[in-house]
Amino acid sequence: MLIDGIFIGGVCDQGTGKEVIRNPFDDSIVGTAAEGSWAEADAALHAAKRAFALWRFSPISSRQALLLRIAALVRERAEELAMLLVAEVGKPVVWARGEVNRLAITFELAAKELEHWTRQPAPLDSDPRGADYEAFVERQPRGVVLGIVPYNWPYNLAAHKLAPAIATGNTIVIKPSQQALLSTMTLGRLIHEAGCPPGVVNVVNVHSKIAERMVLDDRVSFVSFTGSPKVGWHLKEETYQKHISLELGGDASAVVFADAIHTPTPTAEKKVNQLSSRIAAGAYGYAGQICISIQHALVHQTVYEEVREGLIEATNACIHGDPSSEETVCGPMISSDAADRVESWVSEAVSNGAQVIAGGGRTGNVIHPTLIEGVPPPMKLACEEVFGPVLTLRPFVSVASVIEELNRSQSGIHVGDFPEDRAIGERFFREVEVGGVIVGDYPTLRFDALPYGGVKKSGFGREGVRYAMEEMSEPKSLVFKRA
Image 1 (tube, rainbow, N blue to C red):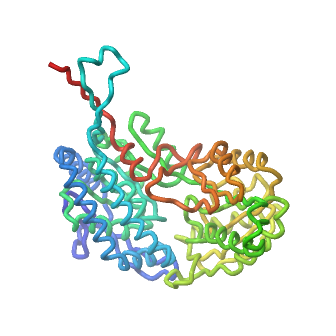
Image 2 (image 1 turned 90 degrees about the vertical axis):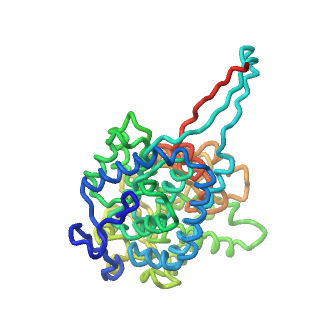
Image 3 (image 1 turned 60 degrees about the vertical axis):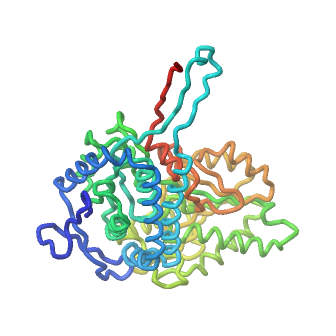
């Protein structure tokens, strides 16, 4: 753990408890991670609060330089960081390298945003009283940020808390997922080695009860939580007087329209193959353990059979298993409990009339890519986030009907639609109740510079570097009376 620039609980430290970390694919030991108590959590909060008194006034150029040094170190150690992801969370190696690349981009984006993070003049000419005054607005840091990070993107989702906090002059305490401790702790060490001042970034591993106590602590000014809706909304209720951002679950859909298939070029067969491969990647990649993984494929009834056959072929062709293989798309679930849950949801749907039409089955913690048709609306697979490599398939009849169906969901982060007619994409943007619409591609696409978050049960507030910087700061007015 990193507390006030000091590492606690190293290999030779016998006074700190350790957790053994195992590979979810083959159960081999990856390493051990230090385990803290309230004493470590309290020390981290104290260090962050003390460091804030100086860091808030640090020059923007110093923050930019630190962010760029972090990004450079990430790129220098990219393969080492990627292979740790493969071993600790079972992320397929191609996806792991993608996360590490985005990790560097996130810190670079924060440095770039600081080029415009300056005091801005505010016009007063609309008010006749303003003739004798000049006014400015400047965003100022809130204080100590508590970042709670999930296991599925332990680098980049941590970075979406770390980079904006560092950039805006806040200090931060990161609480990693207990299923991805080594990855997030390694990122903390890298940030320290990049020259981060003591106390500005702290990383502690504590259990959920202690984390909740940290959330409620008066030293914390802003909470950035990414995780389950149950925990997130509970924290929101507990912190009604505190600024908080919640990035929670989703059940993203990919919507295929007839004109996306029946176009003069390329051929309909080629279009079906392209769409099916892309949807399969978005549904089964990284075992579906992504908040914007595709859970539902909705296909216009006039091209349903064509796309159905394409998805059957793509599902059966999807390579699953060893995450260290360059060809693997679908690796293991994070744990046997997670695999058990996904398996039980599929069984529940099948026992109530649904049919697995491609894939299915399980090997260890690997749930094989599963395409399932005819899932009744009350089933968990139809209305809750599966967070696994399972894709439901059903037809729709019109643009209006599919928008109505999408809006019945209690979640809403991204939707992806495949029309040839751009006007349909514009209609989706206006009418579908989600945080983002991806037209012509799958909803699993995220750019780190864009606002990211959900509506309804999917969250509160926005990430994305610039938007998180705004969440972690507040505007302050300055008015000068002219002499």
